[in-house]
Image 1: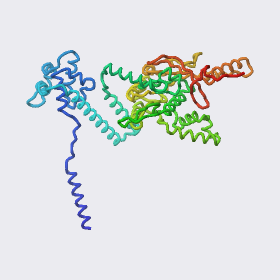
Image 2: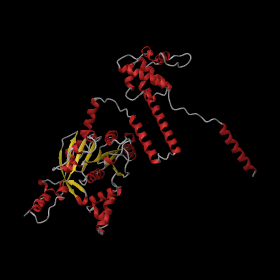
Image 3: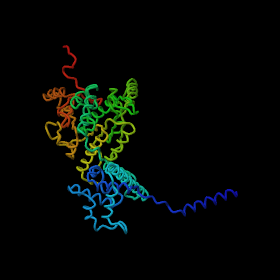
Image 4: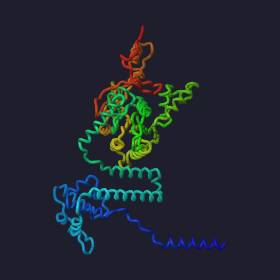
Length: 505
């Protein structure tokens, strides 16, 4: 008992001692010496500014005076003037003294005197920039903690998470200072490598094969870093077509191990599918219906025989090996989509990204109620994401109702809804059109002369679909004919007349 009392007293004294100790103050990360070295290098040789101006800004400096010096020097150099301690002196004559013995003009002279070379100026700049990003992350984290503690009624946890994701996305976007200029010889080498890969690949495609031969021939496959818009009116088969393409790509996936331990995609690819409208189960049912050749309606209602069920199980086991990943979260923002796509590429790999559909995404809240600006932000973000991840992105889009007002219902670029930025940012714009859908709804009364004409017209368009390429940066526009089996929601290659089997009377 005495021992327990002694231990309790010891713990109490230790806690009291810890409470008496002042809390350690942690200063925000910074490197004053790197900032001084960078500014000194610029002052002795203005060409040093060219090495850091692409990514470094005055706000990145920890010392406000250093930020002012950098900004003033940058403006002078841009104006074609020399930035030296003497020329900068005019702008800092009335500045506050650094200490009792040193004025700002004298400090400028000391910065230049202590700088010996500009060789390390880019390293200094990267150091200053990285530390600034860390400070911004700390501020962001503190704001998140404070908001979570305060728990304001009009700012629920979901909104806090969305704002944090948006701010992190903005921080990541602002940090993309890129690689700068690339030598033309390097670009030519990349082009030759792409041509060689296309030559060695089955089908001689430079991009991913969609599994639809005529479409691949027209586009050369799905090209890396391209934003591909697939648009159409409701019931034209947009989701069916993109689902077919997604599974064709995933099913053909084949990779080989590289010396560094990474996997290199040889055929097909790993597919990420953002389904903002349909659930993952509905998408899986569509693909299962297509592969098993059992009507999706029968699968949903359980109207299948024992043999058909065994076929479904067998097909589903084969399908489960395809690297196809579905995110069925509805109403996400472009920032959330980008974050999840990056995570998927990092953890599983990614070769093709699909968004169904574009109008169900949201932009940042700061855009307000201007839907045109929001769509512009979304399409710009998708194009930037395609370039960042080096994968093709297929985004589905709705068309305006003005298509229905025309006699020829084939869509045009002007039919894209809400913003011209969709057409502007896209590398490829494709429209799905099925004339069968419209002809079927014009069915006249049986037994009339019009009914016979309608039957003839239906026979001409039944089971056929068109993919109209309205824009393509890398190739020609035009129309591709496809086969469509509505009961299986399946698009396929349309057999040509010369490929048809002989018919005997």
